[in-house]
Image: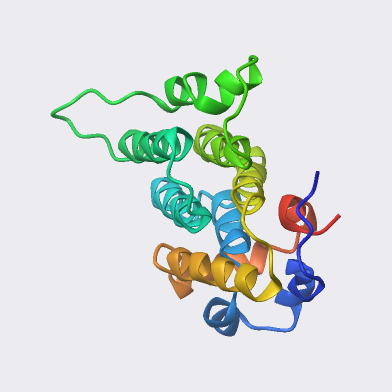
Length: 202
């Protein structure tokens, strides 16, 4: 079921058309748009840095959810494992992205385990899609970034202003890995609406 975003969030492609690359980088209020574009053009942006920013964004949204239970602890552990796979420590053995995905709580739920509290499965799938986003090729990977954001937003109390503030915070995270010069390249090539479908209201 698509996330019902407020109408003023609009269409990312139409939003970009009214701005040059610099103003778009400064003004963008959607972390999901920025990271989807960055992941789609992974030849332009370092993929690991995008993945770390995605993990930081999903973790922030999970913290906003506010439930401290076995699911949230598992989600945080999976996000930390993804970080470890993207920035491996030579001194220790880290699981691969495939191993993280296969051993994830979302995979366990998919195979029949029942989620705990309301929203648990959404957060579990947000972490799962974050792993998928780093494991897949460009186009599919960009879609998985959108799915991760959508799942992470689903269990949150949905008020337009709060939702806007949350995604704007994620945009600040994205700006940390997506400098203006790189964003200009993404901006100039990012006119394909299809890569943003996971985060556009259907």
